[in-house]
Structure formats: structure tokens, C-alpha cells
Amino acid sequence: GDSVTQMEGPVTLSEEAFLTINCTYTATGYPSLFWYVQYPGEGLQLLLKATKADDKGSNKGFEATYRKETTSFHLEKGSVQVSDSAVYFCALVGGGATNKLIFGTGTLLAVQP
Amino acid sequence: DVKVTQSSRYLVKRTGEKVFLECVQDMDHENMFWYRQDPGLGLRLIYFSYDVKMKEKGDIPEGYSVSREKKERFSLILESASTNQTSMYLCASSLSRGLVEKLFFGSGTQLSVL
Image 1 (cartoon, chains in turn cyan, brown):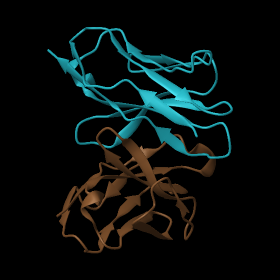
Image 2 (cartoon, one colour; image 1 turned 90 degrees about the horizontal axis):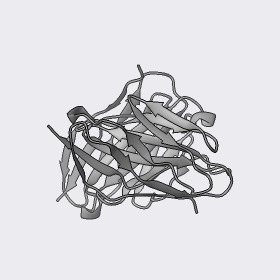
Image 3 (cartoon, chains in turn purple, green; image 1 turned 45 degrees about the vertical axis):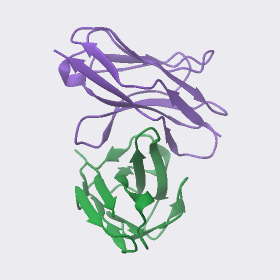
């Protein structure tokens, strides 16, 4: 079935460092891809999305490009801040009839001043 | 902004108790979902509902049931709580059946079953 694989955390960075969180997927058809973020003590919220190959989703300085050839959707940010500390989830909605959001296991990011 | 409210932030129950987790959304969304979140396992879908009185099983429905008598309210029921149901429970909603990806989440209920 459809699935999402994320790099394991925690990822610990200093402020202003470059961030990459890897995400790869397995899906039939043409899925839509998403990154959700969960700040401490809160529910998840949608960060960005891409609905077709080569699309780039972006929001709050974060970017991710839908790469069909490598089945990847890596999250990047050029300069992280302490306020970016959170758990990041990669997710997909399959291109078939399932119509369900499938999440990866999440990656904890800790940014130190 | 959409608000999804879960009735309790922390809950402690004993094995065998019947447990009700309540969720209310205030934006007339059609879809509502219950997930559980466990370290190393991410979010797993328990049940979801596309309309009042409708429910569908997710990936891990065993030991759970749900109720949706009103559009804004979706309840998760643990008929007889067990220790392996200790987890963070997240409720979510989305506007319509064709927009399942833009979920709005509540803050979660951390349930401990002793």
C-alpha cells in the first residue's frame, strides 16, 4: 500500500543553519504530497503542499519539491530559527480511490540559539 | 480560523473503563477524523466520518468505536480501555470529501490507561 518514509530524528541545528529533512514515498498513481508541522503542545498544521511532479511548495521560508523520478519530497530551509523547533510530518494522499492522508513517522527538529 | 476543540488535554483512566473522547469543530466541515500518535509510529487513522451518522474504519479500528450524531461533533469511544491504548489522540476535520488533505487538528488528548 501507499507509505511515507522520513529520516529519523532528532535533528539538532544551530540557529541560521541549513535544514534538510528527507522524505520518500511509495504510492500508486499520482499522489499529492504535504508537509505538516506540530509545534509543542499543539495539533498539526499544514505547512506546504505539492500536487504534481516538479511542483514546489513553499511557506514561511520552507520549501519542498515533488520529485517523481526519485519519489521524494525533501523539506528545506535556508536559515532556521529557534521558533522552527517542532515535529515535521511528511504525508501523502494517494492517487487512487483511498482518499486518505497517510503520514510519515515525524522528525523532531531542535534549533539551539 | 477553524477551531477544533478536544474536550480534555490529559485523561487518566483505569483498565476496563469505558472512555469517551469528544471533539467539536466550528466551521461546518463535512469530514472528521480520529488519529492516534505514538513515538516512532507517527499518526495512524482510527476512524473517520464524511457525514452525520456515517463512519468508516481507518487503519487501526480494533478496540474503538465512534459516534457522529451532529455534524460538528465526533466522539471516539474506547469500550473497555486497555494499557496499549495509552496514547496521544488527535481529532481533525476538513471541509469536504474532496479536500481530505487540508486537515485542521485539535491540540490532542493524552490518554493514560493504568
